[in-house]
Image (cartoon, rainbow, N blue to C red; front, side, top):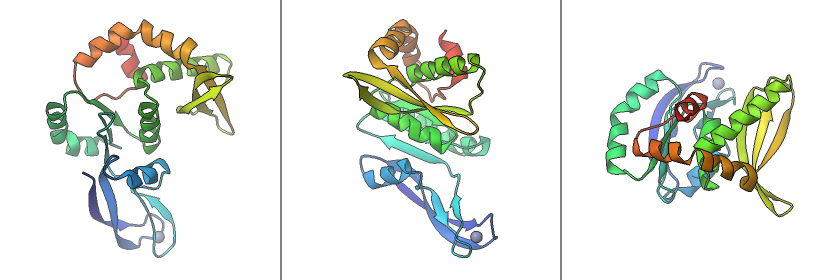
Length: 213
Ligand SMILES: [Zn+2]
């Protein structure tokens, strides 16, 4: 199910109080319209009635895809982690075949949904992001962010696409599914399968990659 919560919000711009609703959990199978709003970055935000500022609520959001069998928990800080903790073990016990992920920013929630919808392993995608980051750093540039942006077809070949954001511009990187993603997945196959036996909520980031090698 999806779960709507009412909150007394204070506008950080003008101090105006108003009652707003937000979604504490989103089930993409039951409420595809909420998923559309999420993917457009418009799910848990509101417009102040007094000053018209658009405010991101920064609330904890649990995303649940029953068809692809995964949950992603968007938890912005330690406090939200603490509040969510008692539910987490319960989900693992109830849904042992699921993938469970943590993210701490909405942009990474959207990224992860894209990765899973393209039937990719987010751990391999994270490896590719690290390789791209190294390549960019070696070229003497310092990016702010590397993000998976989707898959596409180029000259009859499937690619995984990435956006690298710099201070004043962004660049697109395309990586071959057949020549880069698949060989990497094969190389780490054993470690990835072994890790799957250890059912837990995972934050898949560069620290996680160190546990694989
Ligand atoms: Zn306001």
